Image (cartoon, rainbow, N blue to C red; front, top):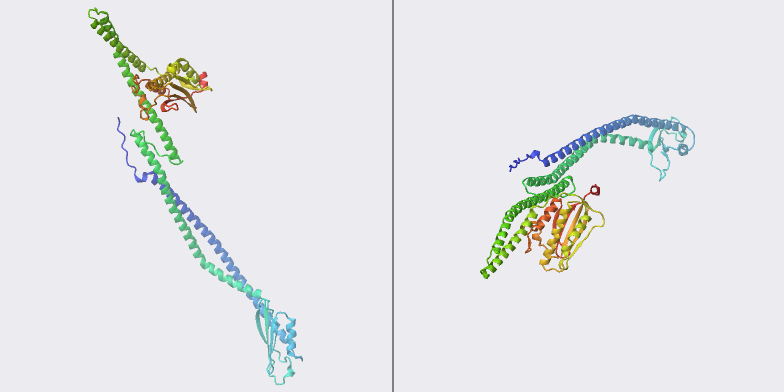
Length: 518
């Protein structure tokens, strides 16, 4: 026997688990790197867009501010001019100055307050009452000097000057709001420019943190997947190594539904078939050795039987008859020798039958024909002493690959064994039943009896040559049956029978009907 090759240890970098984990880690690193690159591109893109938008907003605000300032200045100049006009309207005309101011206040809606101050006179003040629900307006004060001949000149002879007129104008609050909003917008633009770098750094930190989390998850997932995968592969390789060492009883674990589990189940099925084939070959080899031994024993025993029988017969014939007691003893001895010679002849015949089991030549045969011929030719085996043999013939046509004569011989041996075992056990009436069970691609013949049955521990040994529990048995009938079944490529095993005895099951292959017709 050749020595098995030495198994070198696999380096750690060559292990499947390390490769799978490394592949997943590389993929994780590539994914994280790609994510960071895309995130950087996105940040740069949106940063440029935001910077462009901020610059445009700042430029627009800078362009709008002078226009708004010019608008305010124009309003101020208009207010001053209007104040000068109002001062001119208050000329040297007689009348009450308060009434004149009220008239001016009623004519111009945006006037809020008019105040007239003259040397030597009381201050005259006229204002417009504000509405409670109105939006508060901003005001602008304008002070102008009255002309030399001012209002009510003749009213005070001691006046030293014309005086001053203070005019309070109302400014539209929308103008002020727009101005305030413009200033607020400029401050916001400045703040956004200062926050832009912080936002970019924060975004990159988030992306980097998420990438590291993904990378750690990829490493953990890689280790878990690699261990789960390599554990099955390692277990399968160990089973293969033990099979290579000759252990056909070991089996691989086939948990899950992945490819490795499918491979393990297929490998286990192969081991089952290989173990069965090995047992079949070993049994046939043992049977072949027993057949060779039986052939030699039959040859060695058969040759001296005839001279022995002739010699004792001559002794009996040559007896002179002088002594009756000697003659009686001689006849008794001759009868004993002849009985033993006849027993040896039967044993030689059994050995010869066992040694000369012909080779199985299968062909497509209708199962019904095999069973009917068996029942017609050997149905009398169950008729003695009130026994019963029942053969069930299938109604539908079933074609099997069989040697018809040898298959009938196997059934005869089984029925004879069942009948003799039941008679020795004292079962009356003896019942033997042959039935058929059809399976996809297979046919199983069931032979049941009401005999003593076969113990569980003897159900494999009964098929060995010269293994028998009957007093008159040779132990070759069941061995011949198993050899015939194995030569057919089938199986035979024993179970408990519903009749109370043993059930022999013969599984054979079905054949195509077209082959049978051919």
